Image (cartoon, rainbow, N blue to C red; front, side, top):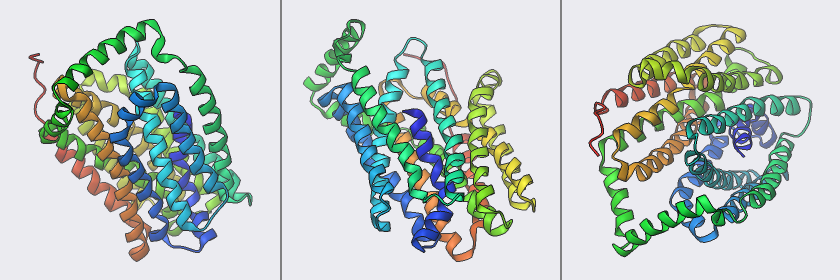
Length: 391
């Protein structure tokens, strides 16, 4: 499932030049896919818990995959562009639901850190192969929308397998004990009135760490998705790149992120997350400037991959720091709020990049990203100090 998510998120960057050509539209219009994708993500956030409680794990997984499959079917048929924009809403909704279920499942396993590492690592692998396959197909005259046949096949496979794997999940004995405990606590919450849930969300939104964390992840995902989505278009217009070759640069960026998550997470933990994030972001600024100024495709491709490598560990590090700073009672609400707002950053920034690219050119990608790194550093510097837990 995670591999499918990576394929889904990384392919649009390589496909944008072909979508523009196919529909005869500009950067500004094509950017709408990022907006509806994020709307789907944000809208799914409040429903995830309710859907799982109502349907059970197995059917909730099947539903998320069915929503994804519906979105892919629409795209494969290459309908008028507004329908493509609408289908990206379905993709956002389905992916958010699946991601929340997967994160909760892995986080509650015995060796949760390793499980989450593999989960996000396989997302990264999907992120690497997405642009490779998309570029190879589209540059050899295959209609761009046929790329989504692969995603569709994966979604259908996952729907069947997830429904089967998690069938009777709630009946498993060790899990049964956990769910009984959860039901007991949620029953108590319910007896106090549903206000406790909205209360914890209200508390979370008032919390300084939550707000700064949301701003930080908003800027982080904004930069990540903007680079992934627009670097190919930048290389085509400013470095005379051939679309059939520079499409692979996006894969290099994702390879950097994946390698960074696997290889740098441990050293970063040893140095200390607070300091590491500052160093990683400053390094990202330096290599982003190189991408902007080095006047050849290969130099840019290397610089973009290094930006990916440096950005890779930032998200896991930041999440670890936020968890330490947040009181346990509001961790769940706060982290959901942070990730939902983060996803909206992954829509707002690429959309504005597209709007500005239409007016002045795709080089705006770099100043926008450097500005976002600045926002990240400011938000990070304003976080409270980590103190020993009192509870």
